[in-house]
Length: 260
Image (cartoon, rainbow, N blue to C red):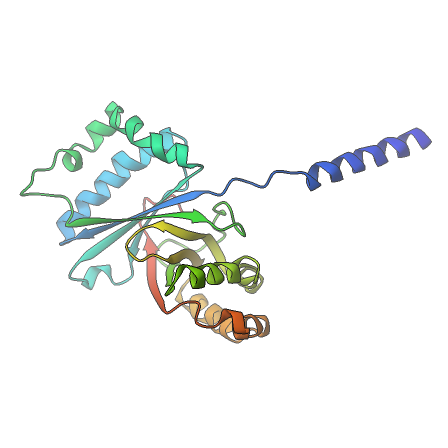
């Protein structure tokens, strides 16, 4: 019996040591593509390209959890948009994927309409690209816990711009050390990712995405957040004043062929 107890104690000590010295997971990188489209015909062409060509070739190269989203108001917008979220394990994976894709015959065949489009019949108006790195407080994308249907589910992507890099760094610290991420989690927000933009048109800024069962849940949770005592305390601290001056909010729904 004594030997068993000693053995268990040793195992517990080893486990505790391994946990204490565990290497934190590598922070992911996120590419956000925004296709600007002139109408429904271009949207159909982009849908076909993403569904039949891009997503399959990315899956083939072990890039998973690819999100395809459209604004809730897409149908009535003069310029329609499609948002593509691609997570990468590392900069190396991002840097090598283009060459791999270009050599893939299935991709070239399935994406021919997009790849070989002529100058007077393009599949999109413009492409906007944003590249970001995951926060230390959430280094990898988490599985979406929302269980509602794609037609009801609401994804919200937010971009917070700051006047200077120093103020931007303070806003990032509010999420990590200031526990803004923890507040979201405690209140029941389903976060997809939090990230710091490192390339794009609105630097310095951070970008994150959260998801809700439906619009009613969206409205309730934001009201809970606004009135949360911990959030009120954090946001009232002198060092957290004027850390951002603009918030862009995008309400989205997943395409029926999105990974989540």
